[in-house]
Amino acid sequence: MMKTVWIALAFLTLSVQANAFKCTTKPIQPPLRIVNKPIDFGKARVEMTKAYIRQHYGKNVKDITITPRIIVLHWTAEMSLKKSFNRLKPEKLLSDRKDIAKASALNVSAHYLVARDGTIYRLMPDNWMARHVIGLNYSAIGIENVGGKGNKAEDLTPAQLRSNIALVRYLKAKYPTIQYLIGHLEYRQMERTPLWLEKDKGYRTVKNDPGRIFMKNVRKAVKDLHLKTPPRGR
Image (cartoon, rainbow, N blue to C red; front, side):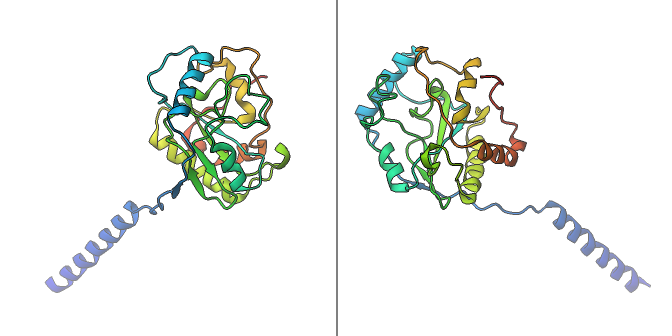
């Protein structure tokens, strides 16, 4: 009789342990792979960034660190990783950017660049200000994606979509201060928020990146993060 009781208890213990193990384990997510590929960001670019902040946002700053509150997704309008990187790399604006040259000689930049195969490159510290979105640079992390042929085609790849989703999740975890996820094409809508700082009312551009379908798909995948969309209008 005792032998039967011990056997029953043994089976019960194993069953409880097995169920406990099943309930508490979670799939292990692989770490996000980010490749460092720094653009030129020396003393001259830092000083131009400070001057940009002073001129356009009315702030006198000792350094160019920011508190990230927005993630802005872009496309480069270039189909080549090399060409896209080379456009962002120099400290001074390239001569063909006459549309924004009057505002500053500071070159455009972004914190991350995502290749067509989904490889994520970190171009600069993500808590330094980059010039990538009018009015919002002082609180925005920029993610560029290689593509957007002719600045019109919604041709970003499934691999880029996956990488952007993963990067948004990584950045939100790293910076709980992030509140918004926007596409560059939506930036004018942010004029209705306190995060908009641009003082020059004539300094605006029209943007299409990174495409409405891409934004819809990224937002759907990170819905659980409860990131805000821009206010409606405009």
